[in-house]
Image (cartoon, rainbow, N blue to C red; front, side, top):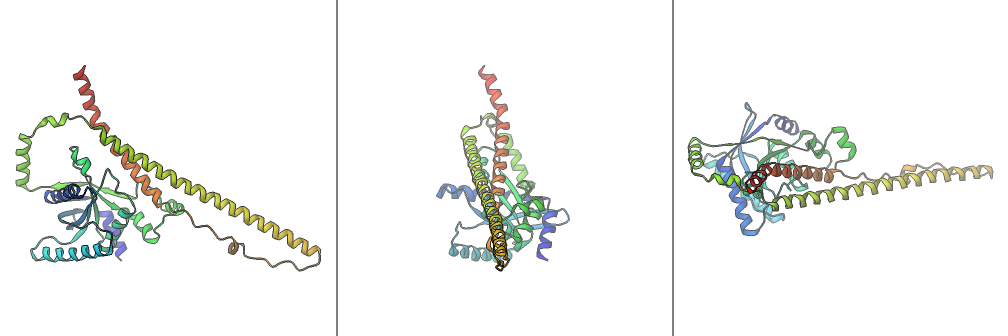
Length: 328
């Protein structure tokens, strides 16, 4: 029943509305931790409600969690979450969990831990999303807030088996492109906030639009892209080794069957009783298939890096042509 509800909500949520207060809390938490311990990876809990009539997930509140992989740290986070929900309920603030937020470094969030977190939240709450914030891209002048959810096919497969095989991916038509589903994000402001933004827009420095793009951002993106290609190459080597081992096993099995047949023929000619037939599958057991999950995640990260590089170059190439015309 829970799985069917999850798939229904996963297919009906079409937009995520976030208040500006939540955006400010997420960015402040990330930049504060980044300055304090040089760690861009922070996380927290999102609270809000689901508007089923409009197919909108509204995020109205959030609070941070402690970064810890130990059992003690996870227990502290669970107690803190319960205490925060109890306190918010008392002051009549939305306390229903609708997902989590996490900071990332140049779209490197798509890994096994992220997949586990999204899956666990979906199993517990049926309507969870993952909000990803990139502080480095935001510093360049573009607010990077993206919302993701696990696709129905990926949720079903991951619930059955944590390691995807090639047959499972082929039968369910699952690729790196439809592993996660990105949901459009809309920032919702109050009327007074919109008035303040209009006043700030009138007095802001418009010369920042002519700032030329920095090469360091592109270099870091290219380094991450090359790292992802190395991971794909390592996965391909594992697959090739597995195919060679399967071929060797099949060759040994055929040789064993042929030798057994020749031995029985000799025994029959000598007037001896032939050897009993044996189950070859018990002697030559099938090799476990190679999991394709890591390759799927690496391909997803590579695609994200390519899109990020394309957006960065497209936004800066016009400025470069303009600067070149001024210089000439």
